[in-house]
Length: 366
Ligand code: ATP
Image (cartoon, rainbow, N blue to C red; front, side, top):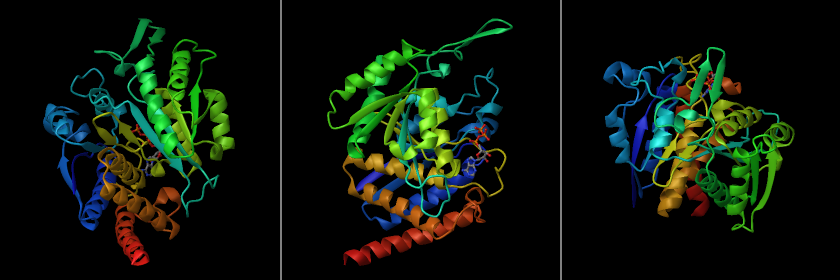
Protein backbone atom coordinates (compact mmCIF):
# COMPACT_ATOMS: atom_id res chain seq x y z
CA UNK A 1 0.00 0.00 0.00
CA UNK A 2 1.25 3.51 -0.84
CA UNK A 3 0.33 6.56 1.19
CA UNK A 4 0.99 10.12 0.05
CA UNK A 5 0.62 13.39 1.93
CA UNK A 6 -0.52 15.97 -0.61
CA UNK A 7 -0.61 19.72 0.06
CA UNK A 8 -3.53 21.50 -1.61
CA UNK A 9 -3.36 25.24 -2.32
CA UNK A 10 -6.32 26.69 -4.20
CA UNK A 11 -4.76 29.95 -5.38
CA UNK A 12 -6.49 32.94 -6.99
CA UNK A 13 -9.03 33.56 -9.77
CA UNK A 14 -10.28 30.27 -11.21
CA UNK A 15 -7.92 28.38 -8.85
CA UNK A 16 -10.54 27.33 -6.24
CA UNK A 17 -12.93 26.20 -9.01
CA UNK A 18 -10.46 23.98 -10.89
CA UNK A 19 -8.75 22.67 -7.75
CA UNK A 20 -12.16 21.62 -6.38
CA UNK A 21 -12.80 19.42 -9.44
CA UNK A 22 -9.24 18.07 -9.24
CA UNK A 23 -9.81 17.00 -5.65
CA UNK A 24 -13.07 15.27 -6.62
CA UNK A 25 -11.07 13.21 -9.14
CA UNK A 26 -8.24 12.42 -6.70
CA UNK A 27 -10.69 11.29 -4.02
CA UNK A 28 -12.39 9.06 -6.57
CA UNK A 29 -9.03 7.59 -7.62
CA UNK A 30 -8.23 6.85 -4.00
CA UNK A 31 -11.59 5.13 -3.57
CA UNK A 32 -11.09 3.03 -6.71
CA UNK A 33 -7.62 1.73 -5.81
CA UNK A 34 -7.48 0.03 -2.44
CA UNK A 35 -3.70 0.28 -2.28
CA UNK A 36 -3.63 4.05 -2.80
CA UNK A 37 -4.02 6.42 0.15
CA UNK A 38 -3.98 10.17 -0.52
CA UNK A 39 -4.02 12.34 2.61
CA UNK A 40 -4.81 15.91 1.60
CA UNK A 41 -3.81 18.94 3.65
CA UNK A 42 -5.19 22.36 2.65
CA UNK A 43 -2.87 25.37 3.01
CA UNK A 44 -3.53 29.05 2.27
CA UNK A 45 -1.83 30.95 -0.58
CA UNK A 46 -2.69 33.95 -2.72
CA UNK A 47 -5.01 36.89 -2.28
CA UNK A 48 -7.49 35.18 0.06
CA UNK A 49 -4.55 34.16 2.23
CA UNK A 50 -3.29 37.75 2.24
CA UNK A 51 -6.72 39.02 3.30
CA UNK A 52 -7.07 36.41 6.04
CA UNK A 53 -3.49 35.90 7.29
CA UNK A 54 -1.64 38.99 6.03
CA UNK A 55 0.57 37.08 3.57
CA UNK A 56 0.15 35.50 0.13
CA UNK A 57 2.49 32.73 1.35
CA UNK A 58 2.33 32.34 5.14
CA UNK A 59 5.18 30.56 6.98
CA UNK A 60 2.66 27.89 8.07
CA UNK A 61 2.08 27.00 4.43
CA UNK A 62 5.79 26.48 3.79
CA UNK A 63 6.15 24.49 7.03
CA UNK A 64 3.15 22.35 6.03
CA UNK A 65 4.53 21.67 2.57
CA UNK A 66 7.76 20.41 4.08
CA UNK A 67 5.75 17.61 5.71
CA UNK A 68 4.21 16.55 2.38
CA UNK A 69 5.34 14.40 -0.54
CA UNK A 70 3.89 16.69 -3.22
CA UNK A 71 1.46 19.55 -3.71
CA UNK A 72 -1.29 20.88 -5.95
CA UNK A 73 -1.25 24.61 -6.58
CA UNK A 74 -3.95 26.66 -8.31
CA UNK A 75 -2.97 29.67 -10.44
CA UNK A 76 -2.15 33.03 -8.86
CA UNK A 77 -3.08 36.57 -9.94
CA UNK A 78 0.44 37.82 -9.33
CA UNK A 79 0.05 40.90 -11.52
CA UNK A 80 -2.34 42.25 -8.87
CA UNK A 81 0.25 41.86 -6.08
CA UNK A 82 2.05 44.91 -4.80
CA UNK A 83 5.71 44.02 -5.43
CA UNK A 84 6.83 46.55 -2.82
CA UNK A 85 4.92 44.69 -0.13
CA UNK A 86 7.12 41.89 1.30
CA UNK A 87 3.96 40.03 2.39
CA UNK A 88 2.76 39.77 -1.22
CA UNK A 89 5.29 37.33 -2.59
CA UNK A 90 4.67 35.34 -5.76
CA UNK A 91 4.07 31.96 -4.13
CA UNK A 92 4.61 30.15 -7.40
CA UNK A 93 8.11 31.56 -7.90
CA UNK A 94 9.02 31.35 -4.23
CA UNK A 95 8.00 27.70 -3.91
CA UNK A 96 9.91 26.75 -7.05
CA UNK A 97 12.99 28.34 -5.56
CA UNK A 98 12.54 27.19 -1.96
CA UNK A 99 11.86 23.54 -2.88
CA UNK A 100 14.37 23.65 -5.75
CA UNK A 101 11.72 22.61 -8.29
CA UNK A 102 14.13 23.00 -11.16
CA UNK A 103 12.22 21.42 -14.03
CA UNK A 104 8.80 22.54 -15.20
CA UNK A 105 7.39 19.69 -17.27
CA UNK A 106 4.67 20.87 -19.67
CA UNK A 107 3.14 18.34 -22.05
CA UNK A 108 1.00 19.28 -25.06
CA UNK A 109 -0.95 16.57 -26.86
CA UNK A 110 -4.03 16.38 -29.04
CA UNK A 111 -7.17 14.88 -27.51
CA UNK A 112 -9.97 13.01 -29.27
CA UNK A 113 -13.09 15.14 -29.64
CA UNK A 114 -11.22 18.45 -29.43
CA UNK A 115 -10.88 20.30 -32.70
CA UNK A 116 -7.39 21.67 -33.16
CA UNK A 117 -5.10 22.52 -36.05
CA UNK A 118 -3.12 19.30 -35.74
CA UNK A 119 -4.00 15.70 -35.05
CA UNK A 120 -0.91 13.93 -33.80
CA UNK A 121 0.79 16.30 -31.41
CA UNK A 122 2.43 14.60 -28.43
CA UNK A 123 5.32 16.65 -27.11
CA UNK A 124 6.68 17.73 -23.75
CA UNK A 125 8.41 21.04 -23.12
CA UNK A 126 10.74 21.01 -20.12
CA UNK A 127 11.37 24.50 -18.95
CA UNK A 128 14.21 25.43 -16.59
CA UNK A 129 12.42 26.72 -13.52
CA UNK A 130 14.85 28.30 -11.07
CA UNK A 131 17.04 30.74 -13.00
CA UNK A 132 17.09 32.37 -16.47
CA UNK A 133 15.43 35.71 -17.09
CA UNK A 134 13.14 35.38 -14.04
CA UNK A 135 15.54 37.43 -12.04
CA UNK A 136 13.69 37.13 -8.73
CA UNK A 137 14.78 33.47 -8.72
CA UNK A 138 18.43 34.50 -8.96
CA UNK A 139 18.75 36.94 -6.13
CA UNK A 140 18.46 36.78 -2.38
CA UNK A 141 16.58 40.07 -2.51
CA UNK A 142 15.09 42.23 -5.27
CA UNK A 143 13.74 41.51 -8.72
CA UNK A 144 16.88 41.51 -10.85
CA UNK A 145 15.81 44.57 -12.83
CA UNK A 146 17.86 47.72 -12.37
CA UNK A 147 16.99 51.26 -13.44
CA UNK A 148 20.19 53.10 -14.14
CA UNK A 149 18.16 56.22 -14.95
CA UNK A 150 14.46 56.88 -15.49
CA UNK A 151 14.75 55.84 -19.17
CA UNK A 152 16.99 52.78 -18.86
CA UNK A 153 16.45 49.32 -17.38
CA UNK A 154 18.99 46.50 -17.13
CA UNK A 155 17.61 42.97 -16.61
CA UNK A 156 19.65 40.14 -15.20
CA UNK A 157 19.69 36.61 -16.67
CA UNK A 158 21.34 33.67 -14.96
CA UNK A 159 22.37 30.36 -16.58
CA UNK A 160 24.42 27.84 -14.63
CA UNK A 161 26.05 24.56 -15.61
CA UNK A 162 24.37 22.81 -12.67
CA UNK A 163 20.90 24.16 -13.59
CA UNK A 164 21.36 23.23 -17.26
CA UNK A 165 22.75 19.75 -16.61
CA UNK A 166 20.04 18.69 -14.20
CA UNK A 167 17.36 19.98 -16.56
CA UNK A 168 18.94 18.07 -19.44
CA UNK A 169 18.92 14.90 -17.35
CA UNK A 170 15.15 15.20 -16.73
CA UNK A 171 14.65 15.71 -20.49
CA UNK A 172 16.90 12.81 -21.48
CA UNK A 173 15.32 10.41 -18.97
CA UNK A 174 11.87 11.34 -20.26
CA UNK A 175 12.94 11.07 -23.91
CA UNK A 176 14.42 7.62 -23.17
CA UNK A 177 11.02 6.50 -21.86
CA UNK A 178 9.15 8.07 -24.81
CA UNK A 179 10.18 8.42 -28.47
CA UNK A 180 13.93 8.87 -27.84
CA UNK A 181 14.29 12.33 -29.29
CA UNK A 182 15.45 15.46 -27.48
CA UNK A 183 15.46 18.98 -28.96
CA UNK A 184 17.56 21.67 -27.27
CA UNK A 185 16.08 25.15 -27.81
CA UNK A 186 18.38 28.14 -27.32
CA UNK A 187 19.62 31.39 -28.88
CA UNK A 188 23.33 30.77 -28.71
CA UNK A 189 24.07 32.68 -31.91
CA UNK A 190 23.29 35.88 -29.95
CA UNK A 191 23.46 34.93 -26.25
CA UNK A 192 26.72 33.13 -26.88
CA UNK A 193 27.76 32.59 -23.31
CA UNK A 194 24.46 31.99 -21.49
CA UNK A 195 22.75 29.93 -24.19
CA UNK A 196 26.15 28.50 -25.16
CA UNK A 197 26.60 27.13 -21.63
CA UNK A 198 23.07 25.71 -21.69
CA UNK A 199 23.65 24.02 -25.06
CA UNK A 200 27.06 22.59 -24.11
CA UNK A 201 25.76 21.29 -20.77
CA UNK A 202 22.82 19.53 -22.45
CA UNK A 203 25.14 17.86 -24.96
CA UNK A 204 27.55 16.82 -22.24
CA UNK A 205 24.79 15.03 -20.32
CA UNK A 206 23.43 13.71 -23.62
CA UNK A 207 26.69 11.82 -24.24
CA UNK A 208 25.52 9.35 -21.56
CA UNK A 209 22.31 8.67 -23.52
CA UNK A 210 23.39 7.12 -26.83
CA UNK A 211 19.82 5.83 -27.31
CA UNK A 212 18.42 9.39 -27.55
CA UNK A 213 18.69 11.36 -30.79
CA UNK A 214 19.54 14.98 -29.98
CA UNK A 215 18.99 17.99 -32.22
CA UNK A 216 18.81 21.71 -31.49
CA UNK A 217 17.06 24.86 -32.69
CA UNK A 218 17.44 28.60 -32.31
CA UNK A 219 14.34 29.65 -30.40
CA UNK A 220 12.96 31.78 -33.25
CA UNK A 221 13.30 28.97 -35.79
CA UNK A 222 11.81 26.54 -33.26
CA UNK A 223 8.76 28.78 -32.83
CA UNK A 224 8.16 28.51 -36.58
CA UNK A 225 8.69 24.72 -36.71
CA UNK A 226 6.37 24.32 -33.74
CA UNK A 227 3.43 25.87 -35.62
CA UNK A 228 4.30 24.12 -38.89
CA UNK A 229 5.17 20.60 -37.77
CA UNK A 230 4.50 20.04 -34.07
CA UNK A 231 4.23 16.28 -34.74
CA UNK A 232 8.01 16.24 -35.28
CA UNK A 233 8.85 16.92 -31.64
CA UNK A 234 9.14 14.59 -28.66
CA UNK A 235 10.89 16.18 -25.65
CA UNK A 236 12.18 19.75 -25.69
CA UNK A 237 14.50 21.30 -23.10
CA UNK A 238 14.91 25.05 -22.88
CA UNK A 239 15.63 27.94 -20.56
CA UNK A 240 13.03 29.54 -18.31
CA UNK A 241 11.43 32.33 -20.33
CA UNK A 242 11.69 30.57 -23.71
CA UNK A 243 9.92 27.61 -22.13
CA UNK A 244 7.20 29.77 -20.62
CA UNK A 245 6.36 31.32 -23.98
CA UNK A 246 6.71 28.18 -26.10
CA UNK A 247 4.54 26.06 -23.79
CA UNK A 248 1.64 28.52 -24.16
CA UNK A 249 2.20 28.42 -27.92
CA UNK A 250 2.13 24.61 -27.84
CA UNK A 251 -1.11 24.72 -25.81
CA UNK A 252 -2.64 26.91 -28.52
CA UNK A 253 -1.93 24.17 -31.08
CA UNK A 254 -3.92 21.52 -29.25
CA UNK A 255 -7.02 23.38 -28.09
CA UNK A 256 -5.93 25.99 -25.59
CA UNK A 257 -4.73 26.59 -22.06
CA UNK A 258 -7.58 24.64 -20.50
CA UNK A 259 -5.84 21.47 -21.73
CA UNK A 260 -2.35 22.47 -20.61
CA UNK A 261 -1.08 20.73 -17.48
CA UNK A 262 2.28 21.14 -15.78
CA UNK A 263 4.42 19.64 -13.05
CA UNK A 264 7.23 21.37 -11.16
CA UNK A 265 9.83 18.73 -10.44
CA UNK A 266 12.57 18.76 -7.81
CA UNK A 267 14.58 15.91 -6.31
CA UNK A 268 12.47 15.72 -3.16
CA UNK A 269 9.19 17.51 -3.94
CA UNK A 270 6.69 17.79 -6.80
CA UNK A 271 4.19 20.59 -7.39
CA UNK A 272 1.29 20.09 -9.81
CA UNK A 273 0.33 23.39 -11.40
CA UNK A 274 -1.52 24.09 -14.65
CA UNK A 275 0.39 26.05 -17.27
CA UNK A 276 -2.04 28.95 -17.37
CA UNK A 277 -2.71 31.92 -15.11
CA UNK A 278 -5.70 32.70 -12.92
CA UNK A 279 -7.98 33.72 -15.85
CA UNK A 280 -9.53 36.74 -14.07
CA UNK A 281 -11.91 37.24 -17.03
CA UNK A 282 -13.84 34.04 -16.24
CA UNK A 283 -13.14 33.58 -12.54
CA UNK A 284 -16.07 32.89 -10.21
CA UNK A 285 -18.35 32.07 -13.16
CA UNK A 286 -18.10 28.26 -13.12
CA UNK A 287 -16.76 28.44 -16.70
CA UNK A 288 -13.13 27.35 -16.37
CA UNK A 289 -11.89 24.12 -17.85
CA UNK A 290 -10.51 22.02 -14.98
CA UNK A 291 -8.67 19.54 -17.24
CA UNK A 292 -5.37 21.44 -17.02
CA UNK A 293 -5.29 21.09 -13.22
CA UNK A 294 -6.70 17.55 -13.22
CA UNK A 295 -4.01 16.38 -15.64
CA UNK A 296 -1.37 18.20 -13.58
CA UNK A 297 -2.46 16.09 -10.58
CA UNK A 298 -2.37 13.03 -12.83
CA UNK A 299 1.26 13.86 -13.69
CA UNK A 300 2.00 14.19 -9.98
CA UNK A 301 0.67 10.65 -9.42
CA UNK A 302 2.76 9.38 -12.34
CA UNK A 303 5.99 10.84 -10.97
CA UNK A 304 5.18 9.65 -7.44
CA UNK A 305 4.63 6.19 -8.87
CA UNK A 306 8.02 6.19 -10.61
CA UNK A 307 9.84 7.47 -7.54
CA UNK A 308 8.13 5.02 -5.19
CA UNK A 309 7.88 2.10 -7.59
CA UNK A 310 4.14 2.17 -6.94
CA UNK A 311 1.82 0.49 -9.41
CA UNK A 312 -1.35 1.86 -7.72
CA UNK A 313 -0.45 5.49 -8.37
CA UNK A 314 0.55 4.62 -11.95
CA UNK A 315 -2.76 2.83 -12.56
CA UNK A 316 -4.68 5.74 -11.02
CA UNK A 317 -2.84 8.23 -13.26
CA UNK A 318 -3.53 6.18 -16.35
CA UNK A 319 -7.21 5.81 -15.42
CA UNK A 320 -7.58 9.58 -14.96
CA UNK A 321 -6.03 10.21 -18.38
CA UNK A 322 -8.26 7.58 -20.04
CA UNK A 323 -11.27 9.13 -18.30
CA UNK A 324 -10.44 12.60 -19.65
CA UNK A 325 -9.97 11.17 -23.17
CA UNK A 326 -13.27 9.32 -23.03
CA UNK A 327 -15.17 12.31 -21.59
CA UNK A 328 -13.89 14.59 -24.34
CA UNK A 329 -14.49 12.08 -27.10
CA UNK A 330 -18.12 11.77 -25.97
CA UNK A 331 -18.47 15.52 -26.51
CA UNK A 332 -18.58 16.64 -22.85
CA UNK A 333 -16.70 19.93 -22.89
CA UNK A 334 -16.47 23.32 -21.23
CA UNK A 335 -17.00 26.56 -23.16
CA UNK A 336 -13.32 27.15 -24.08
CA UNK A 337 -13.45 23.90 -26.11
CA UNK A 338 -16.75 24.77 -27.79
CA UNK A 339 -18.91 22.91 -25.26
CA UNK A 340 -21.63 24.13 -22.93
CA UNK A 341 -20.75 22.49 -19.61
CA UNK A 342 -19.89 24.38 -16.48
CA UNK A 343 -16.70 23.55 -14.56
CA UNK A 344 -18.68 21.48 -12.07
CA UNK A 345 -20.80 19.71 -14.68
CA UNK A 346 -17.67 18.68 -16.56
CA UNK A 347 -16.16 17.35 -13.32
CA UNK A 348 -19.35 15.36 -12.60
CA UNK A 349 -19.36 13.76 -16.07
CA UNK A 350 -15.67 12.93 -15.73
CA UNK A 351 -16.26 11.21 -12.39
CA UNK A 352 -18.99 8.98 -13.83
CA UNK A 353 -16.94 8.15 -16.92
CA UNK A 354 -13.81 7.31 -14.90
CA UNK A 355 -15.88 4.79 -12.92
CA UNK A 356 -17.19 3.34 -16.18
CA UNK A 357 -13.70 3.10 -17.73
CA UNK A 358 -12.45 1.29 -14.62
CA UNK A 359 -15.31 -1.22 -14.77
CA UNK A 360 -14.73 -1.80 -18.50
CA UNK A 361 -11.00 -2.37 -17.90
CA UNK A 362 -11.78 -4.92 -15.17
CA UNK A 363 -14.35 -6.71 -17.35
CA UNK A 364 -11.85 -6.86 -20.20
CA UNK A 365 -9.30 -8.57 -17.92
CA UNK A 366 -11.72 -11.11 -16.33
P1 ATP B 1 -2.81 35.95 -15.18
O1 ATP B 1 -2.47 37.37 -15.03
O2 ATP B 1 -3.24 35.31 -13.89
O3 ATP B 1 -1.70 35.17 -15.89
P2 ATP B 1 -4.19 36.10 -17.73
O4 ATP B 1 -5.64 36.28 -18.07
O5 ATP B 1 -3.23 37.11 -18.19
O6 ATP B 1 -4.10 35.87 -16.14
P3 ATP B 1 -4.32 33.35 -18.25
O7 ATP B 1 -4.99 33.18 -16.95
O8 ATP B 1 -3.29 32.36 -18.60
O9 ATP B 1 -3.67 34.74 -18.36
O10 ATP B 1 -5.48 33.34 -19.34
C1 ATP B 1 -5.30 33.62 -20.71
C2 ATP B 1 -6.64 33.31 -21.40
O11 ATP B 1 -6.91 31.91 -21.37
C3 ATP B 1 -7.83 33.99 -20.72
O12 ATP B 1 -8.75 34.42 -21.70
C4 ATP B 1 -8.43 32.89 -19.87
O13 ATP B 1 -9.81 33.02 -19.67
C5 ATP B 1 -8.13 31.63 -20.69
N1 ATP B 1 -7.94 30.48 -19.80
C6 ATP B 1 -6.84 30.23 -19.02
N2 ATP B 1 -7.01 29.12 -18.32
C7 ATP B 1 -8.23 28.63 -18.64
C8 ATP B 1 -9.01 27.50 -18.23
N3 ATP B 1 -8.53 26.59 -17.33
N4 ATP B 1 -10.22 27.32 -18.77
C9 ATP B 1 -10.71 28.18 -19.67
N5 ATP B 1 -10.05 29.27 -20.11
C10 ATP B 1 -8.83 29.50 -19.59
